Length: 420
Image (tube, rainbow, N blue to C red; front, side, top):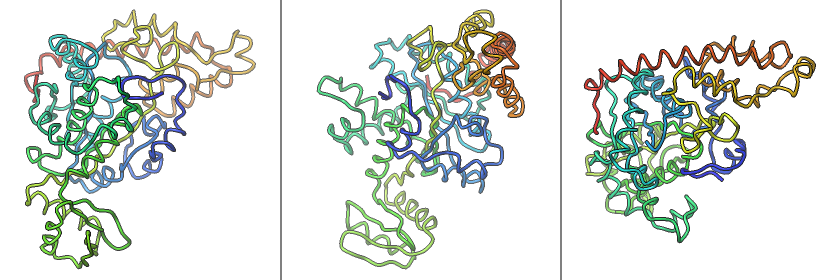
């Protein structure tokens, strides 16, 4: 079972691609100049409409990256993955938006706003320490009137039956979960408001459990717009709930043909789409571009399952001392055999190993070094003891450096645009 609030059981990523209509990410690797290690290693396994982002990067056009964090528990390496993706996109030209989902933590987890602010600022310091630059917008949902006002507007575009279908809500589900889901949609669409330059491609890096929010938001983005459209062979088919608005399409200057209920416009679909969104803004609409998204695999908990803030035994926190973190890692689940002799003979299974996952996701940037470690494990040349010692050294070094950078970040908070 996978929902935005809980994940249970073994996750079959291939099945997720098929059931949710997510597209495999590998097709983009050759078109991205310096793909992030999570992209290169298949950790980012799927996407929706990432072509918009790849094209914006290639053409150096405006785009944004947006994601958020619920401040309900300790910040851990699972959160770091999303932070790394935000920072990478920002360094590749994106305007970055970081939401601290304090309203969600308050309504769904029952935390006070005082507590969510305290926890949330730890997330803020860590993402700055990981390289977020000053031109980002960081905000707590409860302090962002633009997001709350947009959520109010979006609420008119969805009904309870749809929320049940998307999220699996039942008659016992608190209405607060539906409310915070609309807040999440507003978070995702906010970078396209006039205040931030209007419509643009936006990518939302998330785990697969957050896909319901993306599916809802993509639907809402289309519904709240004045114009909706789909690609046809040589152009776009355009519809509007306000049919009189279709007459305005004559102003675009493209060849078109009017039918009952829609207009077909002929020409370069991307040029037509751009002109349509500009026209919609002139007419007082939003002109939202359907948000793009990337999906990364879940970080495995130290004993298996998903790493989760609600299960302290499952995670290493970015705030842990190197000594505590190393002790946790040395007790983590590995892909080793029952005995050293058996491992030398059969080799290890790095695909089942939490320690190797730390190498791949966080600790080793060089693909060549990672491949050598994998080969040494599979061949039985390297045993779990020496592997854990090396991982412990890298982890301790990272946490020491991260703590130093967090201390620096605390002194730089005033340089950032933060609503809190």
